[in-house]
Image 1 (cartoon, helix red, strand yellow):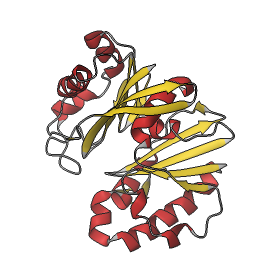
Image 2 (spheres, rainbow, N blue to C red):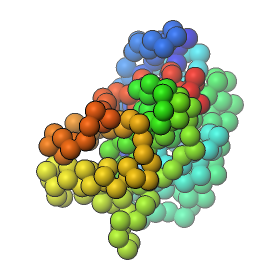
Image 3 (cartoon, rainbow, N blue to C red):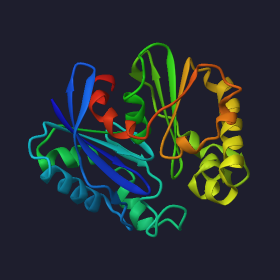
Length: 250
C-alpha cells in the first residue's frame, strides 16, 4: 500500500510517499519542502496537495495533517491559515469563513479521486510512535503547540491544549510557541516546557508522553531529567511517516 502523506504546518509543508506492510513503514520518496505561502485558502492548499499528487501518480491513498481542530475531516478551527500574513498576524474574517467548517477530506477525495484521511497534524505524529497500550499523549512543539491522545491504540477526541490560558489574554500557544522561543532563548523556553508538562500531568495522567515537532530537539536535556522513563523525544519526521499507520488507528 502506497500512501502520500502531507504535513501542513504554519511554517512549511512537507510530503513523502510511504510504503506500508503491516506495521512496517518505509519512505519511498521525499518530495520538495515548501514554505507555507500566505495568504492560504482551502482552494490554494488543495492545489498545493494536487501538485504533490502529480509527482506521485501511483499512490493509493492520501493522508493530510493540519494544525487546529479537525473532526471527521472537517476544519472546526484552524490557526495560522486564517492569518493572511502568517502566524501571529491579524486574522481575516474572510479566511475564517472559508476555513471554518470546510470539509477538506471530502473535497480532496472528490477532486483527486483518491481515498483521503485528514487529521490534526499532531495526531499523525502520534500514529507513527504510539505503542497501543494505555493512555499515550503526544505534544508537538513548532510554530505553536500540537497535541494528540491515544487510548489503547485508538484516537481519542481532540483537545486544543494550545488554547488553554496561562494568564489573562495569553494562551499556551503564545507562551510556548516559536515566537516566544526565539525571544527568550532555548534555556528559558525549556523551563517553560518543563512547567507545562508538570501542570498537564495531573489533568491527563498519561502512561507515556512523546515530545515531537521541529523544536523538540532544542529542548535542554536538564528540563526532562526530573521525569521518569515515561517521556520520549520523537523525530520530526513522524509527522509524515505517521501518515500510513494513521489509517489503522483512526
